[in-house]
Every structure is written in structure tokens, then in C-alpha cells.
Amino acid sequence: MNAADLVNLLEKVYIFKDIGYPLHGLAGKMQLSRFDKGSVIYKEGDEGSCLYLVSAGKVLVYTVLAGGREMPIETIEQPGFFGEMSLLDGGRRPAWARALEDTVCFCLYRQDFLDFLKENLQVSLKIIENLSRKLRQADYRLRVLTVLGSRHPERKVHLPDALSGVSPDAPDSGQEDGFFEGMLEKHLEDAAQDAPAGPGKDEVEVKDMLFYKKYACPICESKFDSPKVRSKYLRVQKIDNDYCKHYETVNPLFYEIMVCPACGFAFDESILNTRLSPGQKEKVKGLLATVWRSRPLKEYGGERSLEQAVETFLLALLCIESIPVKMSKKGMLYLKAAWLFRFKGDEEKELKYIKKAAACLEQAYEKEDFIDPKSELNIVYLIAILNMRAGNNQEATRWMERILRHPAKSAATAVINQAREAWAELRQRVRQEQEMKV
Image (cartoon, one colour):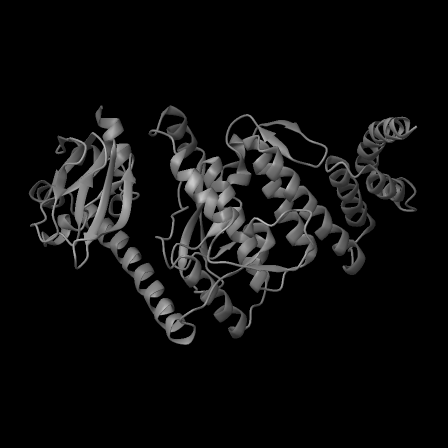
């Protein structure tokens, strides 16, 4: 592994975030260590002397309960890390670490780290800033969990059906009981198993395409930076008939949702303008604290994979269940989640979310006011197309006729032209269905 690869590993450690070029000097101080499968890397109570960066293999961090039973804390794979607090205080290890398979680690010893800080005082300030942010997040989560535990010791999360694994054909009951289970749970597990082996050339290129925009969380008011794609790098390859854009390089949809690193609230730009009452905020805080109670809150503040993009939309769909959001907005979130599953090639989940999107948009059409005919025509077109994609050809026909006969169709000629193209395909499908019935 070369110096650039080591720098990429170091950048995954939260205390080294956004340090930049000086990390090359720190990478030069790291030492290679190998551990056979089953070997103990350190014991609880050992004097801490170094940080471990996993280059290959798998490590279990655990504690030993009374009676000798092991309780797993975390399983760490490349590009993960453990033992970072030893760099700061040299204190004793709070847990055990064991290699689950033959493992290769790069070690950064405390004395080398302290020497590096003496040579790079500006880096020291950045590390203090990163540590403060992490401590603030931990403090906030602890306070919320303490309050939640005292009020609702047995509380469970009421997941929206989009996240709970409910069949798309089941009656729409609104919510489903469970503790962070269903689709979001499974997706997080699958993402961990399918994680790429390490950063490559494409990742470095994507990093250069991003900039960071400042936000304040609508729930806990923590300030943080969230990545966005620079417009000059956006190159559309094609557009599907439901407005899903395919890009040659980086996809801005991956970065559309912001996730607060303190409380885990996921939202998009439109939520920033939504007024939330103190009661609504407390409800969301309780929900999020329960969601993240049994696992570390994930970071989405850097480059995002397709898997991570899916996670952010699932989180956003969970969060909007507790706040006032128009059905049109909810429908678009479902639709964009469907696009992400389309990119993954997961047709089953794509279809499920398309059906949910269509149902929400139909409710929006019946209950919401439209600022102009073009907005109305757009939503009618989407409802028709989504029903068509879901195989509901009769329903799609009903909506397609509505748009083509709309008295204000001249206000959106582009939409009308798209509708006419889809109408030709739809009529062919309906004709084939009728022939099969004969």
C-alpha cells in the first residue's frame, strides 16, 4: 500500500477529517502489523499506545461480561479503524479486540502522533475542532436517550410502511410497529457487506466535484456542512419518461438529502422552510434517538456511494412521518428513492416505491392547490407514467386522457409532447391486453 492509500485510510478517521496535505507526513510514520485469525490484538485494561487502521481482514471489538460471556461492540473491516482514543490520552483500553480472520493493520503510535502535532500546530487546531464536534454529537445523543429512556423505557419506533418491509399491495395502514427493522435495517446490513474494498481513482475524482454547503438542523439546530455537486461536473446521459436523470459522472441525487451528524435528522431543502412546533421537534427527537439507540449514527458528510444515497432517502422518508409535509413532496421522495433502486437494478424495490409515489401524487392531485396549469399538468403526467410503469395500464389510460384533454395543455407543450409519445406505447399495451382476453 502506497502513501496515497494510507492517506485515504487516515481521512476515514473523524479526528483527521479535512486536514488535507499534512496527512502525508503522518502516513509516513505508520507501521505495518499482521494478526492471525483468532489472535487477540489487545485486552481490556491494556495500556493504549496506538491507533489501528484496517487494511485487510476483519476485527471484532468486544467486552467480556461476568461469567466470561462476550458481548460484541463493533465489527471493523477495511477502511475502518479502532483504538483512536489512545492517541489522545494514552489511557487503558476500554474493550478487547480480536482478529476474526487474517488481518493487516497500519498502526499509528501515540508518540509519533504527538511529534507530528508539534510540527503542525494548525493541524492541532483542526483536530480539536473535529473532536469537539464528535463530543457535541455524543453529548446530544446521550441527553436525548436519557430523556427518552425515562419517559418511554419500552418505546418502539413506528416505521412508515416505506421502511418497514410492508408489501406494496397491502392496505395502507399509515404506520407499522418495529424497532428500526424492515427495509432500512436490511439495507444498512447489506451495505456493510457489499462495501467496496477501498478508495480508488474514481473516488478521488468525485471528491474534486463536490463543494460543501452549511446547514442548521431544523430539529436540534446543530450546524454542519453537507456535500453538493458542482454544476460544471453535471453531464446528463439520458432522461427516463418519469424524469429520472442518468449522469455520466457523479449523480447530484446522491447528495440531495442532508443528514444531521448530531441527531440523524434527514431532510432536503424544502424542509428548511417548514415551521415545526416544539412538540413536533420533540416527537422527531424521540424517534431518532430510538432509531440510533443500538448502533452508531452514520456519517454522510463526504462522498456517498449508491448504497449511502439509498440510506439517506430511507431516513428522510422515516423523518417526514413526524412532521407536516405535503403529499406531493412525499410522493417525490418515494419516486426519487425508486430511481435509486433503478440505478441498483433492484426492480422489485423500484416497483414498490413507484406504486407508493403514484398513490401519494394521486392524493396530492385531489387535495392540493396548484400555482399554475403547468404544475398541474406535470403531476398528472407523472401519475399516468408511474401507473404505466407499475403495469396499471387502465389507470394510466385514465390519467393520460385527462392530460391530453386538459383545457390548458398549451401551457406545457413539452409535457404534452412527452405524454403523446407515452400514449402511443400505452395504447399498444392496452390493445395487447384486450387481445389476450379474447
